[in-house]
Length: 131
Image (cartoon, rainbow, N blue to C red):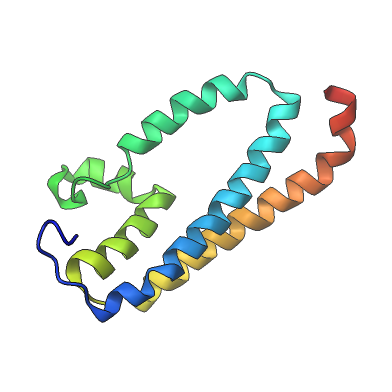
């Protein structure tokens, strides 16, 4: 941001919020994948392909407005789109995002965390039988 000439603003102080929520999202997804990988070994190979596709569907280095309308709808269903939009509005625009974006990021993070913890807790007793 500094190299491209963006001046730090007060909105930079909001950056721990999306990073914390992203960490919760990743923790939930990690627990879900860990539980699934015990039972389905091929997930480790599929996950590499899926993360590559997921990376290209996440608008990090390009604005979503540069895409055609039909593709924008697909990209906006990506849960990481919200976190990237949150960080972009803080760093590039220098403003606080809309309050609905806070809520959407929190809901996605918490739902993923709860589902991941539930699946992991429910299946952890069977791990030793499949290792």
